[in-house]
Amino acid sequence: MTNLISTNRKSNTIGSVPFNDDIYSISLYCSKNYVLHLNIGPFLLLYILWFVIWIFHFGLGEYPELGMIVTVIIAILQIITCLFCYWFVQIRAFMQCVPNPHDQREHAWFIFQKCRYIYDESEKKTFQTIEYPLSNSFSSYLQSKGYQTQDDIDQGIWNFGLNTMFIDIPSFIDLFIERATAPFFVFQVFCVLLWCLDEYWYYSLLTLFMLIVFEITLVQQQKRNMAMIRQMGNQPYKINVYRQRKWIKIDTTDILPGDLCSVLRNNENNPLPCDMLLLRGQCIIDESMLTGESIPQMKEPIENVDENTIFDLERHGKLHVLSAGTKIVQHTPPAKMQGGMKASDNGCIAYALRTGFSTSQGKLLKTILYSVKRVTANNLETFLFILFLLVFAVIAASYVWIEGTKDTKRNRYKLFIECTLILTSVVPPELPIELSLAVNTSLIALVKLLIYCTEPFRIPFAGKVDICCFDKTGTLTSDDLVVEGVAGIQNSDDPIPLSKIDVQSPVKQVLLTCHALANLDNDIIGDPLEKATLHALEWTVTRGDTVVPIKGRAGRWQIVQRFHFLSALKRMSVIAGQSPSPSSNETTYIVAVKGAPETLKPMVCF
Image (cartoon, rainbow, N blue to C red; front, side, top):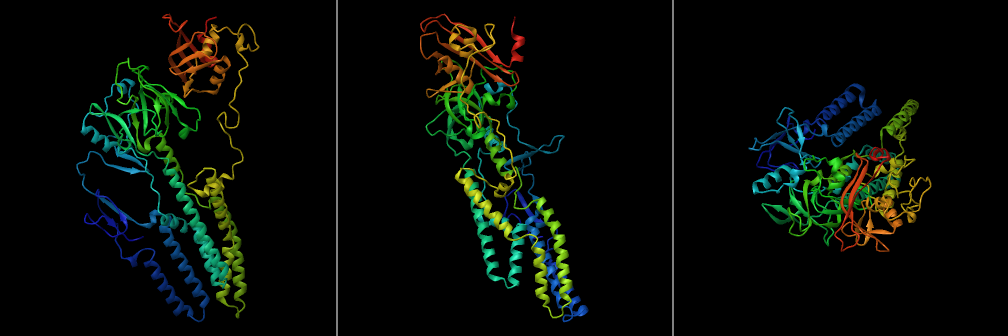
């Protein structure tokens, strides 16, 4: 409906709408003069037609109230039509966009919700998301040498873009116009104008002032919340990557999928810039920002896994993938005596898988920004309820109008205002104000608890929740566990205290070695059940995956290889070795396994 002026390369704007050099021109399908717009021209003709009918057919003096009522109805319809330009994009403008010639580019693409879609010229003839290196064999990742030439780097930049997660925050005016043109707000302003026409000035102006102040407060709070969410994105810093056959420092914003990066714990405690596959070295990662898991997770390299294995993010992600936004709390670089690539800063080597908004952190931000439509104080149920009440309001207003017109001395203008107020009284204008006040109070209370909300009117929806279930141990229950003993051994159904089990017993050896615990700054981290078991045994884990007794001189256990728990296998296992003394060259190796009973039972020989 609104008019957009045609333009060409000489201008880079269409009114106030900018566009880039990829677009040659933008114009309406049927370019019209402003007067001929559908929300202007047709209504001008309608006004003229009605005034002609009113004056020459009905008579200006004989039917003043009829002329006034119809004129007001036409004006209201025009205002609603103009508001439709804000409520519906399809009505705002019908336009065509003419792109520039092919410009010798290999692919056509567009960006939607921070994600790039490239046209697939094969049989599908559809737009596809960018393919990241997520389904290669482990051998291809281990043999990768990163980007070898500048042409490869330039092509990677064009394919994947920069590794940024910048969130655009709308201006105050844009957010306020969005709320000021909402149907409920328009209805409230309409009611205020009716009160003013009924010589109800002071209360009307005070109500209008409160409406505007509350909307301004909500907009400011929304901008602050969006600014807090923007800070969830990583700030750029320098990182070592292997490019053109050497280690160089680049900004994290320049990382591309396929880069070999050196990751390590530093003094700045910077979060990881992208999703990475750990190739060499071990890391302990704090993933609380993404998953809410308070226990740091151990990440293992893929160099000890079968090279022919095809990488599966769902299957291998938990053990081998370092997610963007998480932090390294401890790293163990590759051993010096081992061959293979080593980083210049003695960090662990990781392969960049995904960057930008395609990472785990980026998808979380997109979920917050784009997962749901904006919500206002009204919904479908409210609309149907109001429509039901409106039927009775129309009946009441009709009765008042019919009975009022029987009195020839009664002011028709006042009568029309009263009938209109009856219709608008179905929805009390104070109700949205009270709801806005309640929402604003809730926002302030949530911010004090460090909880931020980008859609304030979703807070009343939360009031419908009666039961909230948590699936993590430690949320509603204590994670402090006490080990009573081991049951099901020595032909006894009662638990046998750990102190009565011989240290060389296979049961005790399994309890000592088969776990995923690690030492972080002289503190044991890992599963609470495994920590409680080791504490009850009076043993501890030191650096280098060595299990030693807290008291006494019993032979220490060295965990040589750990096969972490897999939900598909329902078990985990370790290879551990024990020497009688530190100076002894004799080492006894065992393989310890634990898991679900139905999984281990077929492996046991009776």
